[in-house]
Image (cartoon, rainbow, N blue to C red; front, top):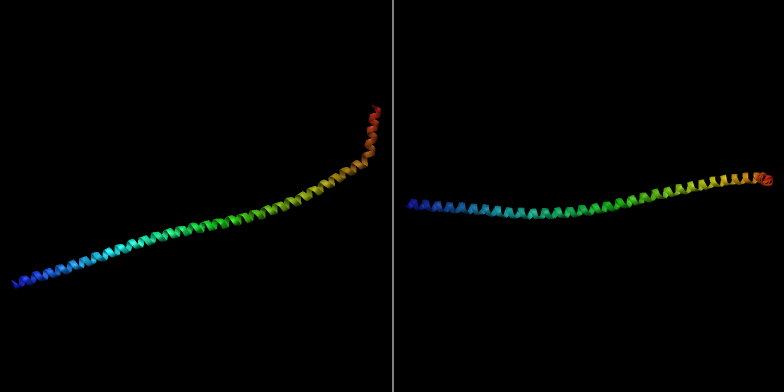
Length: 124
């Protein structure tokens, strides 16, 4: 019976050791699961931070793009104004030249025109 008792005790010890190892493994797995949950939370937080940073950067780039477009538009508008002013001066000079030519023709033919009118009125 002594051998049987020793066998039962050994079996009980081995069973206890196996349970202890299983308990250790379960505890390790639980700890690992907790670590994974913690990492998942940190990853989600990092995703949110990255998203906020990306949106902020997009807003900054959009504002810079608007500023650049505004400056470019101002340059184009100013160039167009200068060109229009130059065209206006040219048109005014051409108009003055034509007006001067007409005035010269009127002055040159004024006496003849008056004589023609007087002659037409007297014949009537």
